[in-house]
Length: 158
Image 1 (cartoon, rainbow, N blue to C red):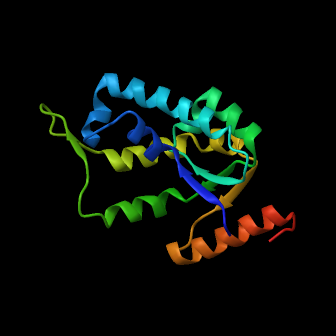
Image 2: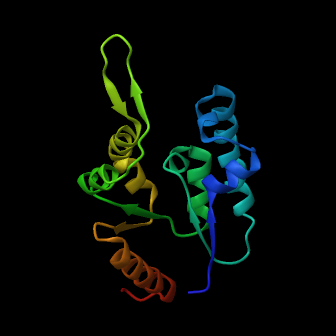
């Protein structure tokens, strides 16, 4: 398939000159990142050719972005089982951990992000035109998703 690919998170971080990823935790960058997501979606809405647009988990939850994306074309929610997401995280050698000073409680921010994603699943499902279940390994997921897209693009079920 010869379709352009856009990643809104990468586009926004380039646009706002994020620098170090830790800057996302600064309130001024959080607001700029949020506003940047809207700007990027508005820019992508001007495309005149088919494209695959990957967004961060927050974009479909921004009402203005959700409306534009649904008007642009087919929105696909790529859904993955929480246990598989967490298992994938456990294989990472680097994790971002917050630790509370008094209690010593440690919070794995990646695991926390997965929990938040699962809480929003119903909202992602409502927003999407299609749902793709991605519970296999990476290699099979790429093959299956490509076939899924070909089926959508050709108008034939895959």
